[in-house]
Length: 170
Image (cartoon, one colour):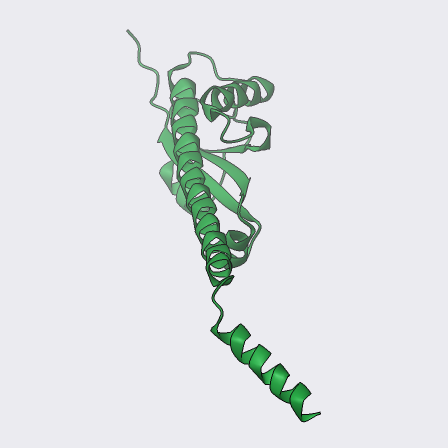
């Protein structure tokens, strides 16, 4: 019995001194962390790109509405807005998943009080204030980023408020 115990102790001591698999184990741990960080950086980069795309799209949509001679109808506005977003998406977002909301106000006092102008087209009429809001939920590539952010999606919001200049006689 004693020989068996002594032999087991020698085997355990030899296993403790051996470093044959330590490099592989250390690499597995370090590589996992490195790959996770790389994907997290990719997610953060995508978030910045999507924010830029939404901001650019909302400026273009509002600009088109301001210079247009006749206001868009609801369907025309939605079609134009989605086409504008699709032209800028570059594969970073799905245009159909972007929510476009416009709110029209008659003056700045109404904007401050939250009183909307009823019956106005989506882009408003001349001499009205329009608030454009685009929202998009982006999924993360990296699951642990979602855990850090307490969500599996990042909600992007782009908002702009414009004043439609009154028409002038030439």
